[in-house]
Amino acid sequence: MAKGSGFVVCRAYMLEQLGATTYGELSARVPDEYREPVDAPLPSKWYPDAAYAAMNEAYVQVRGFSDIESCRADFEAMGERTAHENLNGVYRALMRFMKSSGALAMLPLAWKQYFKASSCHTKRHGDGRATLTVRNASISYLAPVAVGWQRAALRIASGPQATVRECGFDEGRISADPMVYELTW
Image (spheres, rainbow, N blue to C red):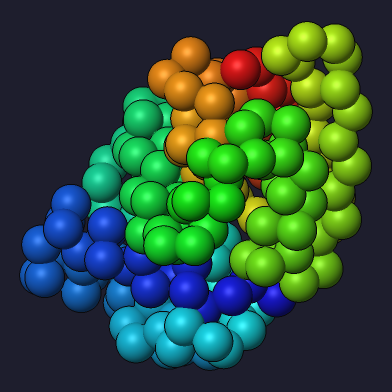
């Protein structure tokens, strides 16, 4: 299950990128059973992961992305925007105070906040490097959205040098279980 707050920001981002008419085309491509989170998501409601996948897949279709690389920047920007809109006020101050090690510890909690069934494990590899493994969140095009979100969170905590990559997406897979993220700061 995916949290409605993520749908709210992604919908706003997609609507800005597409305009109302083309967003209507996106909505029409999504199965009726998933239309609510695409058209009028409620921030506190949980929706099926398949609804998020359908929304992302329809976005790729209406944008006309031809391959996995052509959509990467767009989905990463969507993730960054989600982080900046959802990590505000106290959360932002806490991230800055905790620095990168504290932010790393919060990432599994953040995944649970957005994706109910997900499970995460972090492993530090020394100074400034870690791996985050996420299971039970195999959703089309989620990897680059999460790259953008996690990169923004780490940059809030540790500065502009933070980087994130997801190995499966880099290998050309639009979804994977597990997703394996390499983080540096």
